[in-house]
Length: 439
Image 1: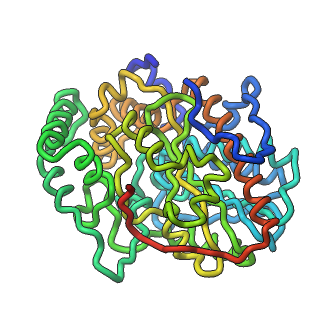
Image 2: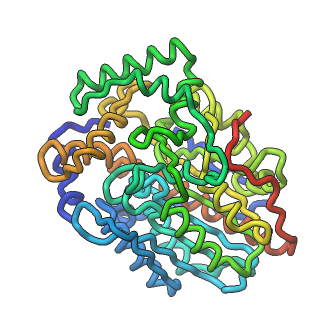
């Protein structure tokens, strides 16, 4: 991918103005048909230049198939364009469905571009052409973190990573002394210049030499609850995004016993058209095996994920605190169990935005944008375009490959949901956690 500064600035104008796939292998007995590639021009109907366009397209597509819509306004905050921000939900199917396929996007704000496109594509292509399986309904939640989506940040309006926010705040939160030690070694001056990026990279490499590659990746990514302005901050309380999502699920899924859960994320640099399935059910839980029956045990296997992770980031998958799916499990238990994963869209590596596996360019750009909130100057437009490109590449080859494999994932999920409904079994929530170190 070759993108120069002028092209990125030009590509940002709409924003400021308004390999072989490692994907779902066929499960035993699966009847799901391989997904077709999007028709010419279709990808541009699904992918959006900014949050407001994405929201409008989601609502239009959901309305066209007769979905029951609800809209939840984020209080006290607006987008860069001064417009209100919403978490929207679309219900399709019987109110008394035994199994609900829940698909959410935008948990990590600007990562919502890919998940939004996948949801819109399903609404445009699959929902109108087929009836849902007996006993199955769909609930699509658009923009869990609308502030981050609109402002091109992973964090929310309070600087909180919503995918680290689901811990029990009535008890002592996880401590992260190594995070604090490493973070204090990073530069403090503000900017986005190449010298500053080089300083960040040097500090990161020095930390890896001192503590180990995985240890640094784990410490900087698992979630921390002390430094408000630092990355991966999990907050002091349950945030609006978490509370609102839980309320939507409790209300709409009240008559169900099972939830098949997809939380779309991006972007690990291991190749266009690939997915990484981060199943947050525990490996000894029967729900873990159920997820494997949908998407292939070989795709959710811990070692398989570690291998993918070692290509794109550190040498194995880090531990995590406060994952949103765990919060969903807690919110719906004991009546409803939840099986599923965070699913990461992957992309080819590029030389401009990720020059090395330790490159901290995205971190530097994010820090600058969070403080400056500048979307209109040449510098601000350039940084905004870079952040947009990191979260969801704008080239057609990525878009089409991602939609194709997302369609396949949805097809296998609904097929698995149909089998689950046919089994007529009670909910088995299993072990509920707020923190896990993955073996």
